[in-house]
Length: 161
Image 1 (cartoon, helix red, strand yellow):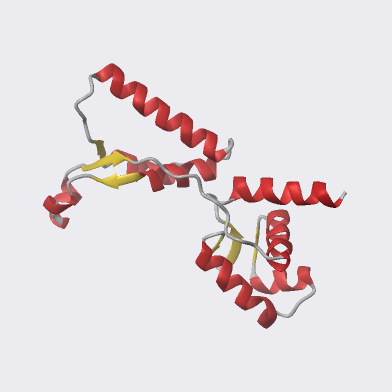
Image 2 (cartoon, rainbow, N blue to C red):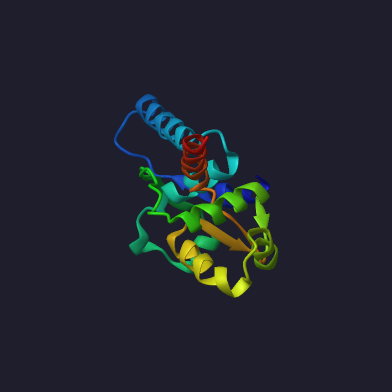
């Protein structure tokens, strides 16, 4: 996770009115919640952590200042990410993505036995929903959706057995 180093080194966490011990306990509670949400997956944990951060005092932000100084950030509670309504075709495509981890569109179409043009609309819909991501022309399950999606698909498989 070296890619987080430049982000972390420029951050300074906003102090609140709590004493240091209570502030540490609150931060620990925040990280335990993120750990629970990520279900032990480091990629999900890092994405959830980044999503939980926001800049404090945005109105006084000057772009030239931020390059020299640390950025003041604060933690926000990340809400449980519910899966959107998924059709049978969506679940089939997502199960294939789970099996392959990452795959390009043409190989995904081949693995599903469909034409690229036939699954393109479905891919766009799942990208907009935030369930999957496209990085360097490779499709994969979005890290923040991965734990719930894996559990959801596992339950469906158990129902079919």
